[in-house]
Image (cartoon, rainbow over all chains, first blue to last red; front, side, top):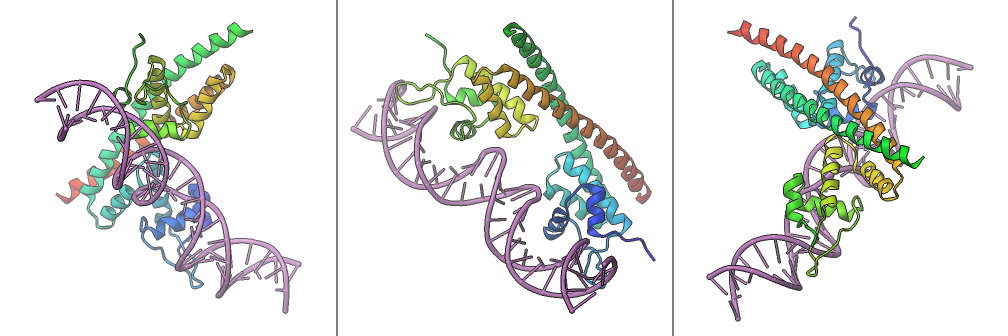
Length: 122
Length: 122
DNA sequence: GTAATACCTGAACCTTGGTTAAGGTCAAGC
DNA sequence: GCTTGACCTTAACCAAGGTTCAGGTATTAC
């Protein structure tokens, strides 16, 4: 007897809504999952791990199409390609961090300006 | 004689496309700008500064509606509200950095896994 | 037995953030 | 005087990423 998860469990664990989980399946982002006798989706532990990783990719701004590409390579066991996709994505994350950090400095500068401006009006 | 910038100048300086600049004006994100006699937009130095700052906000994921709200407060000279909006946005940037940093670790871990996997196949 | 839950499907609808097209004005250069 | 370039307008179109709806099934709880 394998442990399986219902769609609501996956939703609770990943923070993706139930509708989004079905939507991802529908657009082919994730391969169709096994069903129970009554037609309900039954997710395995590795399905859950996959969703969790997808959540990471999405939260770091990887477009759904690129996520799909990654998963396709994974299913084809083309791990060099997986590696390259993640390597590229890692660079994208680093660029994002650099940009955010720069803008954070800008924000602090502006906030300091406003702080003085507000003081003056007291 | 004040220096003015044509729409193409603003585009070049900010990296926003000419169409996007007109689009932002159209949706009311930025107040309508002065025109030259021939109807062409003539941007001032402070317009340019504003666009530059908008670019910063946008690149750090502030939704256009929120940018508009900020600009509205600014035009109303409600600097406390400006301050609060930026303060909130600063927190959002910090959250984003934290998330990206976490995912970067995840990425490195995965990349290391793939590196070993690929080695084994040689 | 009937109500409440939890799931299912397909199709329509929605928001955000633009982009593109069609047709027009105006000034400068040749 | 005509072409080229930079601008203008309105309106239609687009892609990504969901969300909502209408109607149906199956299990459990009372």
